[in-house]
Length: 330
Image (tube, rainbow, N blue to C red; front, side):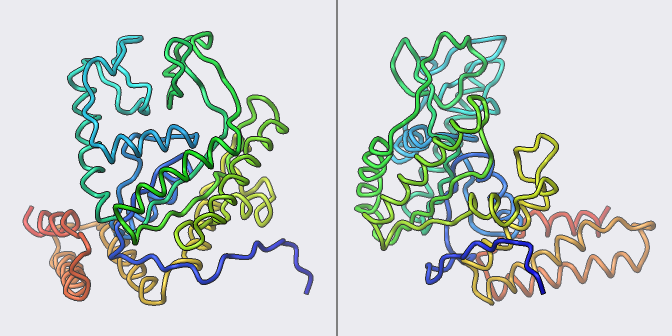
């Protein structure tokens, strides 16, 4: 039989990821995609406490602020177009008043800080090696918030800059948490503002930097080939969204399956199936919610949850349990 697909070899022998493994996941849209799957599967996950970040220096700066538990003040914000913003944060943190913006920022930063000492995995997705530097301060910003382009200098990071920054970061974090593992991925989403060639230069810079870090920290730094899977295994426009740049939902689900093959044991996969079974049952919309049959159905869901929690007490089903009891006692 002819094979119409180029398969990308998955890394072997990597440390497994289980539901008992605390994870901090940061980076670009791809990080959000994988984070959504992990969250729905009940992994212990903190996802993008600064919002979506695209370049390696913004991610490392955010990590340093999490580690040191920086507390943002109004001096760290600016007002523009009726909202208060932070150049370190995604627009989802912005608000009409500085007090609301600071509440959004500091609450998430504190939550992330509290997870760092317990982390098993730090998963980082690099989107681009291009950075925007504020002309006024010379600092790399994470989000321009639609400020005038003339306020910034845009440049391509070098491989050495990224490697030096993360060599220091990994060394410092490993000194505090010797079992912490770093998983790097490069986003398959192409940034075509400067053309396809410039995008390839950017992605190549990221890939070379991660390769160097793997060589320097072979027991701590790992790489998952999401970029290669989309570009080689899924090189067909049916696997892309309408903009022809972002992976389609089908492609994202395929990446999740390949990720599962790489990191999950048979037991972890079974837990994921049971969690999905409960989620699917709860999504069922009955014609007669007050019927005795539906009440029995909800009771069975509660029993499934209780059985799973008895076996894996670290799984969090609080929302699902409350939903069942609300429907049982309308």
